Amino acid sequence: IGFLILFVFIGTFTYVNFQLVALGLSPMTLGLVYLVFLPSMLTTPMAGKLAVRIGAKLGIISTLGLAIVGLAALLSVSLPLVLAGLALVAIGTFLAQAIATGLVGRRAVTDKAGASGIYLASYYTGGLAGSLVLGQIYDQVGWPTCVGVLVAALLAAIVIALPIGSMPGPSRR
Image 1 (cartoon, helix red, strand yellow):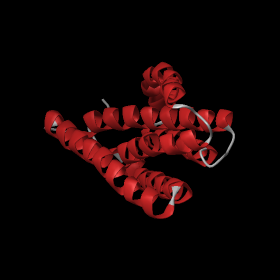
Image 2 (tube, rainbow, N blue to C red):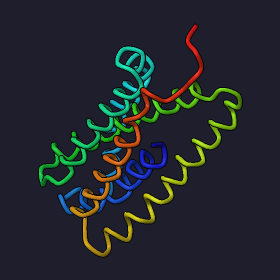
Image 3 (tube, rainbow, N blue to C red):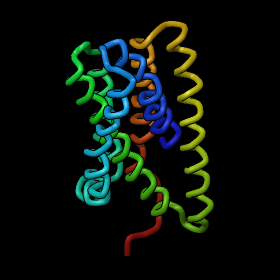
C-alpha cells in the first residue's frame, strides 16, 4: 500500500506540471500551485481519529477513493477543477499514508522498527517508480493514460487493503 501511495503522489505531482503549463500557467505561477498541499497538512493530523472511528481498512479505502476522485478531476481543462483535484489527491494520499503507517506499528508484534523500516523502504521505492514509470507513460502516450495508471494503482492499493480487518494483530486487552 505504501509503495502505491507514493507511486501515485510522486507520479501525479511530477507530471501534472506539464498539464498546468498547457492550461496557461506561467512558470512563476506554477510554484504557487503547491499551495494545494495546505489542506492536506491541515487534515493529516486527523488520520488517527478517522482510523479509530471507522477502522484502518475503511479509512484507507475511503481516503484512497477520495484521491481517485481527485485524479479524475485532473483530466479537466478547468484550472479550478484541476487545482481542487490536486488538493483531493494530496488529502487522500496523505491520510491513507498516515493510517497505513500507524497500522504497521500496531500490527507488528515483535520488531516494530523493522516492520516500519520495511514499510518505509517500500514507500520510497514507490515514489522512485512513480517518477520513472509515469515519465515513460507521459512521453509515450500522454496525460490521460498517466491518470488511468494512477487510478489503477490506487485501485490496487484498495484491493490490498480489503483483508486488513481479518489480519491477525496484537490482542487489544
